[in-house]
Amino acid sequence: MGAACLLLGLCLAAQGAQAPGSAPDPVLRALEAELERSRTIRLGELEAPYFIQYTLEDVSSFTAAATLGALISEDRPRFRVAGVEVRVGSYDFDNTNYVLADLFRRAPAGAGVPLEDDEAALRAYFWLATDAAYKGALQSIARKRAAVKNLGAFKDTPDFWKAEPATLLEPVSARQPEVSGWAERVRELSNLFRGYPQIDFSQVDYTSNRTVSYLVNSEGARLRYTDWVHWVGVRAQAQAPDGMPVRHAATVVWPEPEAAPAWAELREVVEEAARLTDALRRAPVAEDYVGPVLFEGIAAPQLLAQLLGRNLAPVRRPVAEAGRTPPVEPSEFEGRLGSRVLPEWIDVVDDPTQKQWRGRRLLGHYRVDMEGVVPQPLVLVERGVLRGFLLTRQPVEGQSGSNGRARLPGSFGAKAAGISNLFVSASRTLTAGALRERLLELVRERGKPYGLIVRQLDFPASGGLRELRRMALSARERGAAGRLVSRPLLVWRLRSDGSEELVRGLEFRNVSARLLRDIVGASDESHLFQYLANTAPLSLAGAGGYVAGTTVVAPSLLFEEMELERSQEQYPRPPVVPAPSITPRR
Image (cartoon, rainbow, N blue to C red; front, side, top):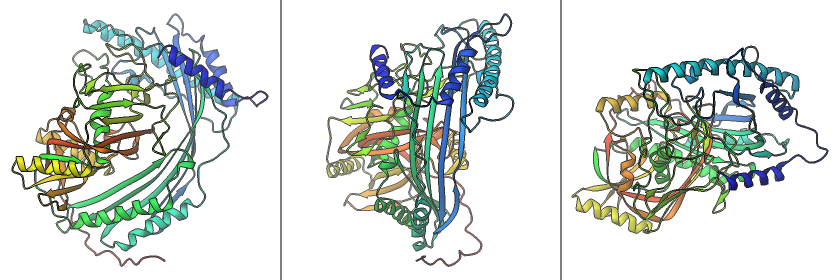
């Protein structure tokens, strides 16, 4: 923040301002006019707002899904999502950061957000929405003041940080979501599963998403910019002879339309998903294991996204009612600034300004966050020592201001911080072959018959809400320590002779950020993992109304010791009637 952010904000304004003579944007004009009128809002002798912010996201999409070469859905949804934030009180104490703050958020009466650029209709919507938000804010701050009085002791941390207002006004392109040919491509990709008749379920889907975002606030921020995100998702499921369900999932995500992967790459992703699902069906069930584990390829950045990424965002405990514990899961790095959280030969930087890595467009690049703050590169871990956190405008004790990491909606009237492009680098590395040999050395030292290589985790989680609940319930029943971590999809035993054997049915046990200090090796090659983060546990695929494109770049990692155990879930019975005959479609 500070002068650097302000300078960049002014540069963005100069680059993105409307050209002379261009038609004014009716959406932006409506937001600014209603914001100016709302500055005088006041209910009787009650306090007036000190901060108002309007956002509007205009979303256009194309989606298509197919199974076994047949299209099962095709849609072109268009919708708008509006946000109104009203704060009463002051930057030091307002209606947010209170455990019941979200209960006082009111929806405006009447219809939804107009899809047309009609200034009068848009102003009418935001007028009603502002009225509802203001009344809710007054109720919230009254209840919060009563709660503070009842609590007696109260930590006097401000409720909102000030920020330099950014201006970014990009021209709105008429380009629409990528549609041409994609329904047929999805059909053709899904048809590849016809060669694997033992796979019970398979699906390939495609989404092209274009979002034009607007933000104006009473501090002077004015934003209009366009984001693109596209993805092809692949899911496959089968049942082993003992009834255990096995599955594989893969997602290829890219930002701008020009960054679309080659057709051959998409075919290979689907074919690999089919091969691996069929192989898992025939693989032996693994035993409980405690010992060294190598996370190879994208499995390493998938693990770091969970153990490192989510703990780099400190969580502020809201004011609670007397006798109630607020439902907050704190960061495992809380109070550890300046302490070692990784080996001394590992550094971590979060850099949303980076657009490419080795020729690949990065999903985590963005120009301004959800609160109108321009981000800068941020050193988070230096030589293994925690040096910083991902911060929003919600004050955190011991910190001094937002660093532009508000990426998703949060709780208690705040936004949630998240990683962007997270680069994890090691100064002490081994070749892939030497790392495997080091794994075998550790196995021999511990007298183990084999070590484990994990090559893919189920992250973002693809098993659905039911499996997520089962995993959480199972962990509580076992009294497992640590946090919920996505299950490994692809695990191999590595024996002393160098041979590998695919196994199934394992889940992690007692995994926490503490394990990161026990990394004993890293590869000399880094791996790119890109995904769509959301606010659901394990970034459950398809959950949450908002997503944030995220990138993690990291080497393969060798852990000295981890615990994995055989899944305790009850297996469903196989289908009563055999599957119909499936022949490849020409």
